[in-house]
Length: 331
Ligand code: PMP
Image (tube, rainbow, N blue to C red):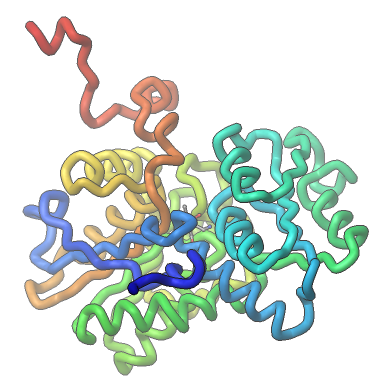
């Protein structure tokens, strides 16, 4: 019989897929994307969740019956909820009230509890996102706060799994590695591994939304989710990437739509962003070059945004392909 003992055993070992259409006429390199949406929780964050929880157990920070408390609305929450449920821990996530219902429902579907905090308060207000999570950690007995922005097990999980998988699956032929920077864990961990194992021959390229600090911005807002920051988290080591390329929301969203329509790959906006940065980094690459781009999550969480023409137009973006009415189609 071929089976795994738990869905947690399915985390990692995601496949590489070659891009064809979006690379045509842009680069001669082979461009391979690593599909992290094929993790059981649907994103690369399953990797850090598994590693962070295992380490906390080993270090005695999480004991049977313990509770995981984290301010997170997204993929990290799903990863933590999934692993926690399998190990018998309670999860309490603190979410700002701007987070949509679908995202809340995914977390509660896995059995997590959520606490919603108002967005329109100062960070030092007792009601704020950060104050509430700190208070819950203090008041819930046996509470553990993973803190993905500073937990070294985040980058470590990518050093131990993502990086080695890329090296193994390309037979050591990878020449460029491209990933978006959010907490910085992916680029720091996988990038560091690939630099070390290759004798520093792999070029590490960060992708960042225009406006974020990693590519020299001020922290001004952007719409791509999960990447970019207005502060420097300790999970990110800025000495790992050789360069960080800034990509606009418009370019990220247009490429995200093209990946679905032309490559059959339905992914989130930070994936489109990473592919744009990869094509830029590989513009002058040779046919022997192998560019690996990490695509962090799937597109189903963005159907009402990036894949919705009305939403796109409301922010001034052009939907790449117009949808047609029945009359248009029959005309
Ligand atoms: N894309 C998405 C959708 C994410 O949720 C994240 C994680 N914040 C990233 C990219 C960036 O990954 P990392 O935190 O490892 O830099």
